[in-house]
Image (cartoon, rainbow, N blue to C red; front, side, top):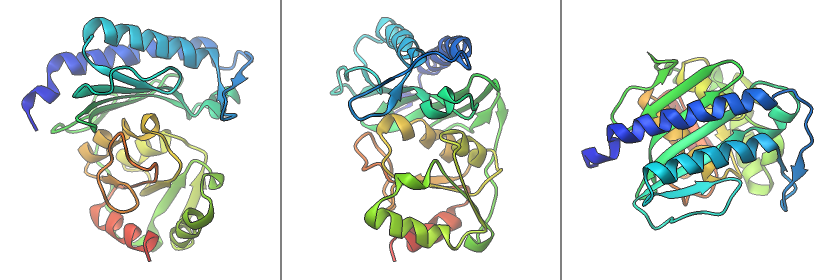
Length: 260
């Protein structure tokens, strides 16, 4: 991929976006503010709307020719080679109920493939950063995922068992029943833990591009592997089924189980 994809100005802008979002999330966290439901019945808060508005404004000022795909507002210029993918509050239910495992997700995609990603946890003041060709970091310190080649010794995360239905549930259950422990409820924070070497697998379904694009460069830059359930690289147009593992061999074994 061309060097321009890692232009310093893109990295600086991504960090600025996270810096803009953090105080807004902090301001509204545990304030017991009302929330509303979108057409799909998922909740949205004033923090979601204010954060995405601030991030979009910055991107359009810095890179008016870039596209933007965010959770809360209409897509903009998706035909651009460069598209910013934004989730102002990933884990809105956690945010509403006062649990600090939500995160602000920021990704930059080049020709639909993620090349830069940030997970920012505003309350715990943790930030994971990844970019194509660079080592991933947590609060500016280099991180590596851990080696675990055995399914039976692996710790698995998913946001909720309710995200799996029909065949997806049957396939997920094959994996979940084989691992050492299955845990739920961490949203994007689980992927940060995987990149930092604290857990081994994250397997999820029914995700949107703004849920997973930021995770790709972080996982890969920490030495892990992330794909869809057929093993294909993730893009803006993937089907929303995501498998991440800290170990490439473990990813291969988990993928085989999902597809048996």
